[in-house]
Image 1: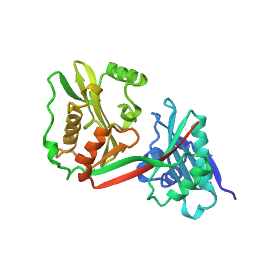
Image 2: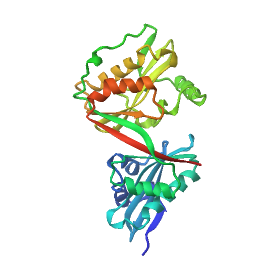
Image 3: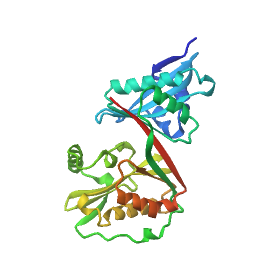
Image 4: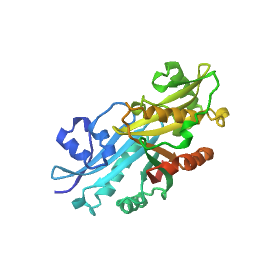
Length: 302
């Protein structure tokens, strides 16, 4: 019997089969298989099975309104490798993303990963761009993070107010989406990216006389981990210290005795980061990190 490759309808899969597919990806990604959501992004799953047994999975997130798709994982069970299943899975998930509006496809991975060489062979075969350094992710133990600068909160003028992002007003949200569409800030700091994962505990905004001028958005990536996803301050306020104030206040909200979120992940996009922020990361954050995860990216434009 030949291997079968097919698009998975996750909502209608038998629970045992769905769980078998969930185990064919990283623990952090299994939520996309186990918890079906109608909220964007759309999840595209391509499965491989042999004699009714799931043996491979390609998983992608599609943001059709942005024309972007990210292939999250590609995995084939050990005893079924070297049979071109990975290539077939990758090809199918690529075509599914393109067919549903993906104009720019990306895949991120670590060079140290044991599957990196196999992945790179597939990228080359499918005419993807050569990989390049894309991101550094700094992992911190929030219980141990006590740098001296954390006690020096920059002061803000009285007309500026910091608020919990969960209390943003409908008209403010509409205004920010309009500004984004006009190009006033990039997708890397979009405050409504993966909105269903935004952590209310310490996601903050800053207003001046009713106008939002900055924000720090965190996402809950696991029960014990937060990702500091987006830090933005209006360009004319970049050297005011207000972005650092948002960062310090957000960190302090994660540290109370009642907060039990131990791990913090700070991603740094090397292709879009502001040089002054990168210097801050290197001087003020990097020395206190428990680990630095370096990620490479390859892509394909349609």
